[in-house]
Structures are given as structure tokens and as C-alpha cells.
Image 1 (cartoon, rainbow, N blue to C red):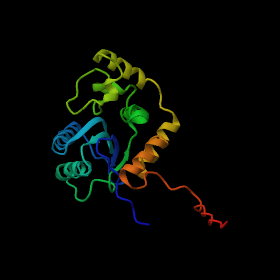
Image 2 (image 1 turned 135 degrees about the horizontal axis):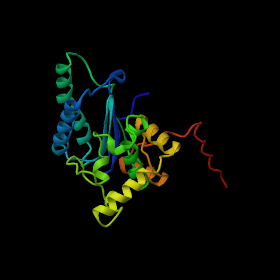
Image 3 (image 1 turned 90 degrees about the horizontal axis):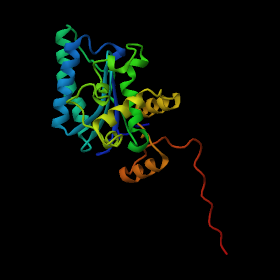
Image 4 (image 1 turned 30 degrees about the horizontal axis):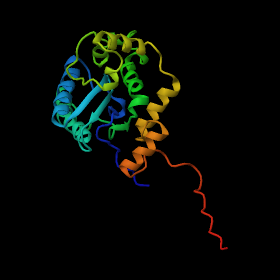
Length: 234
């Protein structure tokens, strides 16, 4: 069966994952992380992508972004790869691809999953056992949202602003949110949707999205379709 084109919806948040080939490291030191972020920021400006949250892990990245149009997200990922991969290969005397296939992405229902996805992304180093607190990891957007330091890469989403009337209130509310552990169900939903490319949200959200995009945004129901009854004559 032919693979459906990646679903990209302008003005809607997307969760993006890109992994290193065979889960190999894609960052070795601070210079690598900083170089990737520099090109990510430049590409976001060029292709009109709002970055709401991110984490750069040693062998993969997570982004929570909103594209302004249907093509900007793909162009951003291509542009960053076009610059970062040759830099990485030259620096470490390697050749060939750095990425494990295409990047993965899913459209997020903002009201239901935006803050959940943001927390999921920024708590990744904690779940991996790399740090004891999310503020101890330098290469994520957590410090920005928690009020520790401003991050020039971040465009705050309206749902983040809705957490409080002042920066102090928003930051305190976000820190409190991140202290609440994500459920296994929430993490599984995020992983499944992103890896398979299906939209993540309520049934109403998916129905509206299917009408808007004129394509399936969720798996087809299992089993044979019901046969229509033949009309009877009177």
C-alpha cells in the first residue's frame, strides 16, 4: 500500500521527531548542539515556523512547532539537514547519511494535547536518566518556560500565555505542570501518533481535520465495511 503524504496543517502545532541513523549519536559536544540550534533558528525564520518547545538528545531531537504554510516544515527539516550533516561528517571524518529515514510528525490538537506534548518533550532527559531535574539539561526549552532564562528560539503559544496573567504566574504554573508525571497512556498516544503520522486529538478534532484536508487523519476502522441495504420497493 502506498504511503500517505505527510500530514501538515498550517497554523496547527506539530510534534516532530528526527533520529540518528541506527540510533547513532548526532551530537557529541556543546559545539554540535549550539551549531544545530543556530541553523534551526535561521531556518525557522526563513520558512516561517514558530518553535514552541524542543529538546536535543544525543541521538534524536523533538520539536513542537507551528508552520505558517503546508510546505515550510518539510523545507525547514531539509534546510537544517543540508547544513548540519556536512558539518557533522566533516568534523568527525565520516560519510553518508546522519538521519534514520524521514522525520516523523503528527498534527496536535492544541486544546487537548499541546501542553502535554510540551512537557513530554522537555522531560525527555529526565525519563532517560540523564538528569534529576529538567532544569539541569541545557539543550531544551524547559528553562524558558520555567522562567530560568529567556530562549530566543521560542515563540510562546497562546495556551502557554493562558497559564497566567503575568510571566511569574505562567512560569510557576508551568513548573507545577511539569512536576505532574505524564501517564503511560499519554506517552503511548504521543509516541504512536508521531511515529505513524496520524493526528492526535479528540474525535471531533479529527473529523474536522479530515473535512479540512480531504484525507484520512486516523487509522481506518478494522473489519469489513458494512454493506448498504438495498432499498425495498413498496
